[in-house]
Image 1 (cartoon, rainbow, N blue to C red):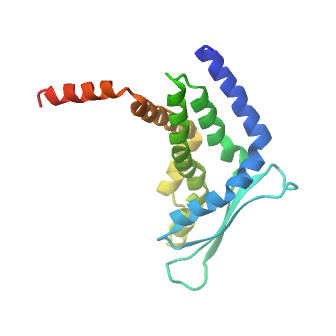
Image 2 (image 1 turned 90 degrees about the horizontal axis):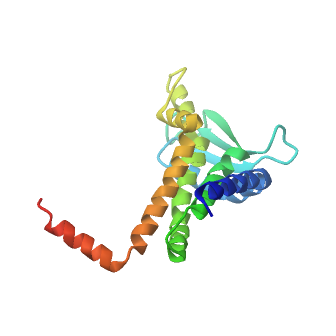
Image 3 (image 1 turned 180 degrees about the horizontal axis):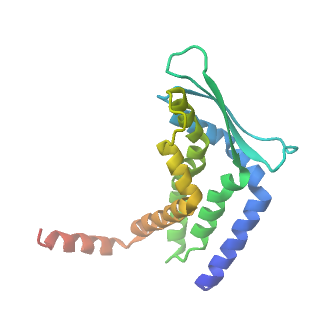
Length: 207
């Protein structure tokens, strides 16, 4: 199968996943994103209340919704603001719909290399999801903290990062994650003799 056909199949598969499985995927991963949000919130005056998918009757479209309380400083008994952050399920499933079809359809040297790429892809994909949707969910909490500190129109580093993702950076991160996964798989499946000869060659190179 040629590269063009592979990527055409991948594009169709990604679109089908996004259309048919968006709400299901968002519902299944909501606990993971709640854990990511709480991990990011650790050390900040933020308290994550819930991360859940909006009901089917919600219009327009289903959303992954984070609800959190923001305090002016840590240890304050009463919250100063309640923040509700909504991310469309289409954005939530985008990383899955791009990463896995691209990884599975990318040409590899052997079935063993593809298997290792899939195994390595699991932790890398979890990090990718945290770096995209996870940060999108918590970014407004930093903005709320800045406003409580007296900045009426803050532009935090979190918000800059979200704008980068919205401007196409999200796809760049997803593609880089695939390439990193494949590079690791190729390194692990390189024949031992090649690795040893490469090491010897580097050892004899002048420093």
